[in-house]
Structure formats: C-alpha cells, structure tokens
Length: 375
Image (cartoon, rainbow, N blue to C red; front, side):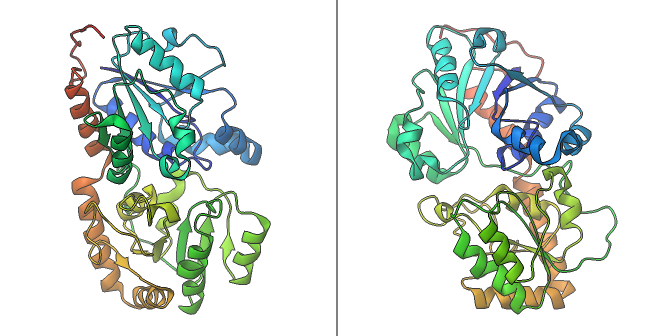
C-alpha cells in the first residue's frame, strides 16, 4: 500500500511532539514493506526554530536513528495531484495550513481514488473549537483522534462511525531500557514549558516535591521564558534546553525517576489522553510518578505501572520512596515495560491503522494492489 502523510515536520521535534510518534509509525510501515512518503511545508515553524537554535547538527540524531525515513518539502501553491499520485491512503495532521487541508479534501470529492484521513493530536477541538471547525473536512473519509474523549467531540460534530481513536505509542525499536545499567541519580523531566497550560502544576507536582525530597532535577525542553527560568533557578533545577527526542532514552537512563505533569486540558475536558512521554518513559524503563490524571480508557495500570500523586505532599513521599527503594523501582519498571510492550508500541498502532484502512476498502498487506472503487 502507498501511504502519504502530510505533517508539520518529520525532520524536527522542536516543540513538535507529533514527530515522535509519526517517525515510529512510518518506520514500522516501511519495515513491513509499505511505500511511505512524508511531506512538510517549506520553512516549517518547528524546523526553523531548531535550525536557528542548533543549526544542521541539530538534525544529526534524527538522521542517524531513522535512516529509512525522509520527508519532502513543498512550496505554497504546489500541485497536490502530483504529491498524492498513486496514493492509497493519505493522512493529514491537524498542524497544517487550512488551505492544504481543503485542497486535499477537494481532490477526494472530485473523485481521487485514495482514502483521506484527518489526524488530530491536540486539544484545540475543545480549547479553540472555532479554529478547528474552520478546517474544511467535507471531503475526508474519516478522522483519527488521539483519545476517546477527542473522538467524542468529533462525533458531536457529525462524524459518528467515521472517527477512530488512535492513541500515540512508543517506538520501541529506539525507546527501550539501556543495554547495560549505569549509575542513576536524581530526577529528570523532559517537556516544553506549555504556554501557561501547566505552570502551577509543574511547581506544585515537580519543582517543590523534588526540592523537598532532596533530589536533584534535570529539565530538558524549549520555550521556557525568562520568568520560567528564574523559577527553575530558585528551586536549584538544572535546565539544559532542547534535546533531540532521539536522545531521550540515554537521558532517562541516567536518572532514577521521572514525573508526568499533564497539560490542564488533559485533566479536565479531555481526560484519558496521556502525553507521548508516558509511553516513551515506560518503554525506556524509568519509574514514573504521575500528577493527577484520569486514565479513563484503561491504557495502563495506575499504582502498578506507575505511581500516582494527588497532591504535592504525596508526590514528595513517592519520590523519596523511589530514591530509597531499588526494589520498588525495579517493580515499576517491569510492570510499565510489560504494559507498553503488550499494548502501546508503534507496531500496535500500525496494526490498528491497517485495520482502519481495511474498513475503508484498502489492502492491509504491503504487496496487495487495491481494487479501485468509485469515490
């Protein structure tokens, strides 16, 4: 099957978490023999920021660890017919220009034989619904939503029977425990500041508990304004700036534990959607403690795969216990790995995607040729 994916950027993960999951899924499709193409716009915001901060060396981890993947840039006004020629399945991520989304939908409505899906991995459907409803999806065959509560939003917009819940997952070819254990010290948190969506939560469930537990804390991420860096300095936190997502396994491997601090929308109006860092951290074999978050879809086993803290005091107690108890750390690691490997790898998500493709009349094997049906 020929699969075309339109992304904001495949090359850059600078403030672009979808790149993590997309790389793993596309690489798994290539592994299975599918013909995969990725397209991103010229001068993508994420890539421009990465190059401004780190230059071409910033792309080295992506190029080294994903040698089978590449993305092609396109200019405004590019003929979409040419990019989707012979495609069986076309997927368009929500962080794309409204015009691009509409033009691809127009091709489908005009009779293009490919199947067309919109992929939503953000909370804007509830935080900025008018912005999301401005996308012209009238020509689309369906929506991939990265959580059941988000799928429910689309059903309310008239997509009953045409929206599928498709969670993110860990690329376990690259995200796994270290081959040999070395010394682990302190805590680590990998994440962006969050545009004010979890500022208080970070202080309450991460900065203050780490300090109270007497554990050094390393933070990696981007878009930390001056006031945020001042807060980190006040707590004695080491801020390291951006790290390529491909480096996350080695970063996790140096630390005793990490913490999940979800953005506010994923604890209120869109419960049940974890960030991809939960999948990746558990896959890398690092103990995790979560701030309040409802695993509404039963993706994990709270208290078994990871610990949960309802307030800062409980977070401090968990972090103190983890630092002192290697058996507790080992138990959490074993259970977290078990759940990820059983249910939440990119290979699982490819299985799900191919099953969705089959319901749309597409082949599920790499070699099969689809039977073209009228649009």
